[in-house]
Image (cartoon, rainbow over all chains, first blue to last red; front, side):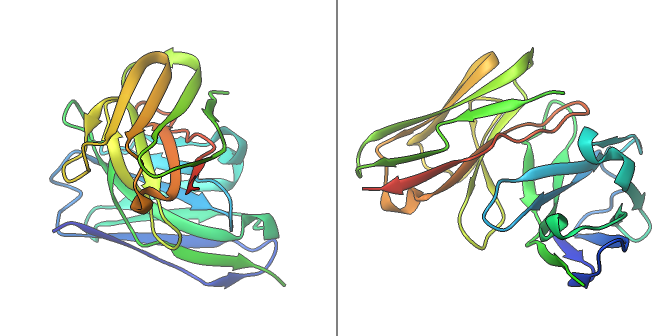
Length: 122
Length: 107
């Protein structure tokens, strides 16, 4: 069974940098064509896609947040890391990572982590 | 920028009603369109992928259709357990945008 788990700080101060880790269990990211994406959800609001890393290591980012985001992958640890700089209270919310099989067999993001809540406050 | 406009933003219907939610894309793309259901306190779960393919385990009252710039999720016979927020998402290429969500309630 494939599972994802997000981890990182619960509380960050304004202007600080947030580092979140998505740990994938039950499969090796180096052996399969899987992409990992990060999504966030402010309290009571809609899902927002943030960043994605393909199995090829190609990366894509939401245009409006591109200058603040960095996504990377450590296949030996089966982890995907998201870094977001210059945090602001409006960045408060639940952050999810999700997995997608690439190619014609894709079933969209069918595996999600439980999410991790991040609060930005001084 | 690529946009997915989802409508309505909320709806209230009676149990057994047919419910339709629409997503319109700012430009056409292939059928890599998914519909997700999210209940409070939980991550989303995929209902439909490839615009019209039902995910395994999802009740057959859910169906998806559309192509190009307009896609539709239909719930044929709304059930109390369908109370949730529904999102569309384009999931291929470099732009993985979500629609703004539709909150579905039971009258």
